[in-house]
Image 1 (cartoon, rainbow, N blue to C red):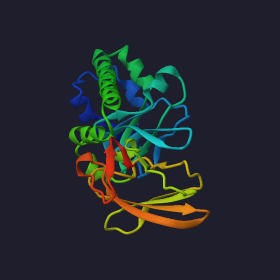
Image 2 (image 1 turned 120 degrees about the vertical axis):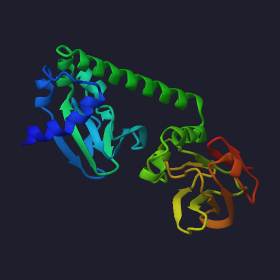
Image 3 (image 1 turned 30 degrees about the vertical axis):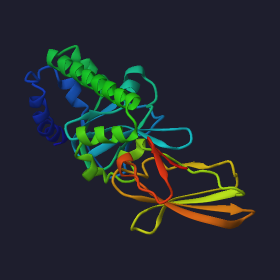
Image 4 (image 1 turned 135 degrees about the horizontal axis):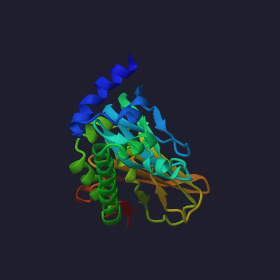
Length: 279
């Protein structure tokens, strides 16, 4: 029954890929499996060895790297019709350099990269599919590299909205994933006599704080906001309290947004790319 189910499920994709000759596909198809995953479930985690690839039928996944200090940096998002997996690790036999996590309930067909590559030796149509998949991955990575190297944070975000317009609704562009490359540093000018600072960032109108930072170092006048916490659109409030020997001596509030064209301030807040600097 499982083999028949896989045959039914893979047939539309074979037609989409213009694969009409199935006489040499037995080895590839034999080890395919159907899989479903819940939201937040991982297909692979960084450091694991796997040569399994996934043809997504429904759902959305993200590929992301984790820095040594625990921050997550998104590599890409994949959705229905995409094939994803740790391809470079499968080719080299090394551990996966990134993790793959489901952002929605997903249905997929899994198969081994080695089976796909072996099928290229028997089927010119599979060889063509294999070459197309590698070419698409190369082009996608080159485009992403260009955006990362030549655009500032807001330009990268606008590029994402233009090329992947479904993500804001599917990922809730807010504070977690889409904005993960927007990791601004909020800075302020030193207060004479202060020996420490308490900073609180909140979204205007909501009241509750999004991010808090405290330091007893008078020379430390900036904080790196959690990646993805601040996104384009909302207006945020930076409430800064200066302390002298443990006692609060002054407090001031600044309104700002990630879009440099809409930064507003009561205290002369000057936007500098993805940094928000007080004079």
